[in-house]
Length: 545
Image: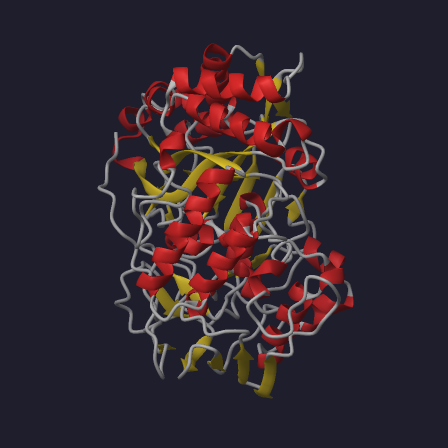
């Protein structure tokens, strides 16, 4: 069912005196579909795309879920951006230079402004990063600043490693050399903020002012629970120039409804085909269907705060649940081969991936071994009469695979398994973040930047912003720190494989499968391309008037 072969993403970053300089081009032949000459949209028609209600106000350092992330990526331009294949291009940065991989000098391209006309300066980045990193601001993506000197998990502390040199230059001092630091800078946490944001950040998050290819379509552009409307930003100075008249993200609570709207041309782009259409969507859509590997993985996360998963008995239960899930059967019967059983915690589309991860036999389906492990746990500490709950949101299409996983677990372990459904993604995230989920819960990770470490550190590092399980391991953290400081990406990847071995032993998350992007578009749009991380390149889509 895969329509494109799995290809490695070009994720390497040059180490040396000139790390990223003039990568963005601007010559009109960049190959990513944008209007490199900045001539404005080729169509005034607004494209309609599926979306979900963002969990939080639209602040770059507060947004770490896909509903808000889709919007943030259109509203803000960072120092660099990633093209369809994951290659890095300069955007606001003119150059990012280092001679030791610890001290970086970042020079901004002149002429950039926010959509309100305010200039983008070095302070726009430094102030935004300091806000995102400050403990008392409780930003979900604060972890991404952990590498910068001055960052603290214990108290409010300014990022002393950031220094403004002039309006278009600032320097970054890291705690240790990290050669892949520039690679991360296309993630939205590193976006700049205008001065107006700091006057009232919560209000700003309802109607943000950015420097990206799109801007909010005036007051009321975010109609909560219904839609978010964007229009082209005339102040945008980069390569991702919109070729359409704007984007309306339609917020759906049912993916079957979104797919039916696509079939009737009431929706232009969908990036997640519902399970009910997996077997027919490529036939129904023809060359308007997309089914290709993407940097996305699904896992079952195991909360550390639940007593039944603590200690030796809890570890045996984690292993038993993992081995009780028939991944091969589920990916074929539910997903029609658009998912691939996972053998690690990362993604095969990322350079450096390997299936040779220590201890990954715990992911192999073995009903008898699963029953034996569960029985050992029962001898230590009985499970009791409560069901094993798998929590997920029901406004996306997860019920079929959760029920299949429950059947597999029930048959192997003899324990009752039930889906714990939340009506909306936002309600699910709120209970997850509050530590109120009563069982294991669905976790999906869509890469922020093309590196193996992005699937590990932000999720499993102690106190990381997406460590929703409250997992902590000194051994894992130490290996991540060593990988960050490795002289080459090859050395870093070896350490990351070793770090995954720790995760295979502890199973704070239970990897399930790698996810293809399964999407499609209407008959009214052209130039639709899905990126390495499964997100459509909205700016290059054209639509018939």
